[in-house]
Image (tube, rainbow, N blue to C red):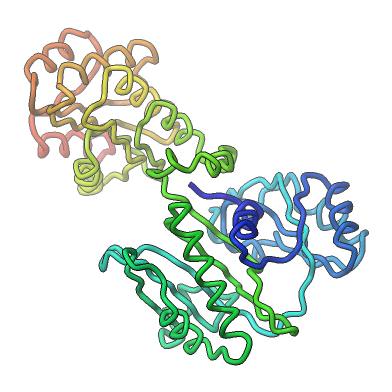
Length: 387
């Protein structure tokens, strides 16, 4: 789950990680009031959306007077902001963060992520702050510092010294960075982060370190124990179909293709998406109803697939284990009768109660296309897309 910058900075403050003073605003009047509370210009007016590259899209503006704050707020609020991470449609801005301007001497990059290849926590740092870290890594990999931390022992002073040395921080800045790193690591672990990023982490003219930006992504699987963070969820920033699917505990990710697919199991979902691509089509989604799905979950999953206007056909690929084939068939038939079938539907069933499942589909009187095996399913999907 992604959260907004202003929300991440609230968590930063709670964990003694220095950030600029700032206030949330949802209208030009509130933006002006926030600037007055800060009491000094310049201030920075920042769009709050779940996407990076806001500055490139015109979503971050420096204001040197109340009139400029008002103009910036009017220019940003209520409009779609297009960045390299939003796609051409952009995201509508409904919140602003108005922050104090800083006298910046240097910009750094800092992030913490889990490194699955080593089963450790990785801290990534660079002196090239304020830039796209992917671009820095591709063009100047020597500027990227990576330090691995054993999650069983946690962050140690040696890790902090290694990062400070890599960033060429000396004098009073080195111990300040150590404190900041220890607090950041504590925040990362305690909130079940899958990503914590500061870009840039700035050094001010007074030799203080502040997180000028803050990006946090929380592991969805851990939200059951992160009740205080769950309140930060902004469903207006999420795909409506994904929000709808989450109501029924469906694992759904919307994609850009034209063939919807329903499976039971993440591995089968990946294989099915490969099958769709090999047939000359593109998957429109990742929909895993899970091994223990019931008839209601299947029905809602099918309904969500049909509600996607980009879907030109559907492939249902089920291996009956805990989810029996007859339960799947009943759910599909009920959903199809309620919503109507507006696109071709190919169904491949194997496993527990497969014959009963096929009988239910055949007796339904609905225009459902059955497939005997994966090769047959691929051929019928190819026919849908006209290959």
